[in-house]
Length: 132
Image 1 (cartoon, rainbow, N blue to C red):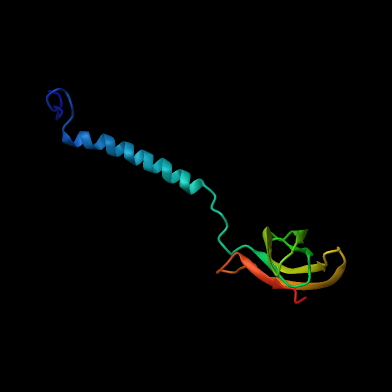
Image 2 (cartoon, rainbow, N blue to C red):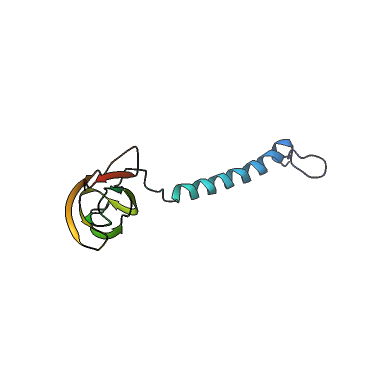
């Protein structure tokens, strides 16, 4: 005597078998997508690993900024600042930065320092007012 399987006419398994196969495939797809999402690196959270700066001031035409990056390494860069408010995007700073101001003819006229927090939970930007 053998074990009798519960099959519908035509050789198919019962109703339960019809639902398990699609659910198994759905489970596999869900598992693969979940693994992909978990393995994807997440971008830095806004304001939690240094800031981009906004240089405000009325007199400088360009600035040379030096300081530490959000990862602790030194960096310097030259930036044109033709208006009163000048966002410097794509450069991330943390700690004290030094800002040298230059007029429209390239003449140096002053240096200021600005402290840029490593953590700013409300924004990716920190304003440094040169006071010139």
